[in-house]
Length: 179
Ligand SMILES: [Zn+2]
Image (cartoon, rainbow, N blue to C red):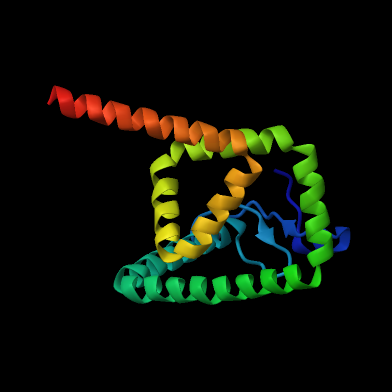
């Protein structure tokens, strides 16, 4: 490495200079023109500091595990509320836009949506049945009305249902006979 005095380095606008002489810690390294400190010493100092900070942070986390967890939980809660509120406000302010967007999306993805629903229904048959049962239990009037309307609109389904019902009855009868 070429010898560059501090004066020269400053004149040439260089950040570092090099004397070729070892620093008090024995590094034959460049020195910062601004502070005269050895670049190598500086690097080691920063590394040691970083290591110390890391260690201190680790110890803090270890000693305050509960506190940190609680803080995180609270932060998440506070922001969930905030996010929910922001989303609610947005929906309120953009009702038209959102419903238009949804309509367009539904239109463009009719097949995909149908397939997704079919898969969901298939995977959650029990859950859906249970939900429907609970709904009917809680809203017997409404459920009866909805069912009446449905079968009115789909007479062939009504016939199908009656056929199945009769068949089920026959199967039950046969089972009882066998038993
Ligand atoms: Zn040094």
